[in-house]
Each structure stands twice: as C-alpha cells, then as structure tokens.
Image (cartoon, rainbow, N blue to C red; front, top):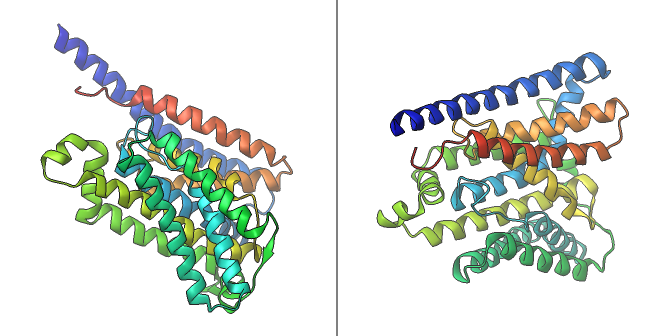
Length: 330
C-alpha cells in the first residue's frame, strides 16, 4: 500500500515536472510569437542580434551564478548562492577603468579586473567553506564589501574610459554579428564544454547534488565549492570589461543587475531536463529575459514592468520546482 502511494506521488510529480518544462518552452515560444505579431521590427535581423548583444553581460554573470548553484547544491532553495556577483562586477569595472586612466596597458587592466573578481570569489569561499557562514549571509556581506570598495575607488562618480579594445568590443562586427554577441556565444561554448563535457564538471555536479557521497568517494568538496565561487568571480571580472565597453565608463549601479541574474539562473533550471542548473538552460532564460525586455521596449511599455516580471519569475520558478521535483529518496 505504501509503495503504491509513493509510486502514485512520484508519477504525479513526474507529470508536474513535464508540464512545467513544456510550459516554459511554450511560454517562450508564445511570447516570441506575440511580440513578432505586435511589436514592429521585433523579428528583424538587426533587432534579434541586438538583443543577443545586450544579453552578453547578463549571460556571463548568470553563468557564474549557475556554476555556484551546480557546485553548492542542485536544489536552488537549499544550496549556495552568490549575491555578490553584480557588485563584484562593479568593483572590477572600477579597477579596470582606474588602471586605464592611469596609463596602464589594456592587458594589465584586464588582468587586474579578472584577478579582482577571483579574489572576491576567494573571499566568498572563505566565508562559506572555511567559516561555514550561511551562503545567503556570507555572500551578502561580501556584496557590501565589494560595493563599498567600488565607491571608494570611483568616489561614487562615473569614470570614463577608452581604448582600442573597448572600441572593438563596442562597435566591432564579424560576419555582421556584433563583437559583444560573439563574446556571449564563445563564452557559452567554453562554459558548456567545461561544465558538461569534462570530469571536472561531473565532479562539480556530484559535490552539489550529493556532497556526502562525493566526500565518501574521496573528493575535496570544499575545494570544488571554492572553485565555483572563484569562477563566479572570474565571470564578474569578464563582465566588467563588457560593461565598460558598452557604457564607455564604470558607473555605480551594477548592483541592479542582481535581480535579472538570479532570475536567469533560476529560470534556467526549468529549461533543463532534471530541474538542475545547466549552461544551456541559463542561456535560454537569458534570451527569454532579453527578448521580453526588448518586446516591452518596442511596445512602449514601462521598463519598470520588466523588474516586476523578473521578480514574479523567481517566485514562480522556486514554487514550481519545489512542487515538481521528486522528493528525496523517492
């Protein structure tokens, strides 16, 4: 009797999971069709590529959050999180433009931005792994440290920057595709290969999904969690360069990117086969959010609605995945 009830519950959850996944793809397709029919110019090649270009920064940052989700627990409600990633990008951008303004070579400025991002990642790992602080609180504290350092470096002002590399990133095109779009495409391929087609990625999933089993297998689980946060910091450093290239400056306010980053990484679990974070799922959710915002803009709908939709998506995804995921041990 008990086995029958458990099997029935599992079947219901499996059906619910299937409906959620199908519903996500249907919603994506439905929104694209709706905007294609109502928003003038939405389906033009220029606009479609423009959205991919605009999504590059969000995509790179969301991949960092996704890897943290993978390495610290595939259950996004109970696993780790990196609330510092957006503020970290702002700090890296401040370091980058400051060094450029002082006459340092682009290579040095880029290296310093990436090292700064990874250093913040190490700080997150120190808080979460070494000091065993709850990830939500630990990364929140690091977020404030990064934001404070950014304001100290820039004195809460917009710091402009220019260089040949930034000009190429801003206006360069290859095969008529913008340079920033290529950055997203290439980084997606690298991240996808590393996470889904290497033993490192497989072990990262093992640590996040079954940490006790991973320990029993001899894996240094703490090192993998550290690595996840360091990769997120690397993504913040890389995104900071894209931010500066797009704005031609470092500007306060990158913390506002946190909500769409969370929305993209969480929504990405719905586009995956087993409700676990994946690079492919995150890419789909980034484009979903990008085309949604673009459609609102073309229809002259206030951008404030986009934030509301992103917040609603976070609540909806967490609720749906909680209901649709099979219970542990079933």
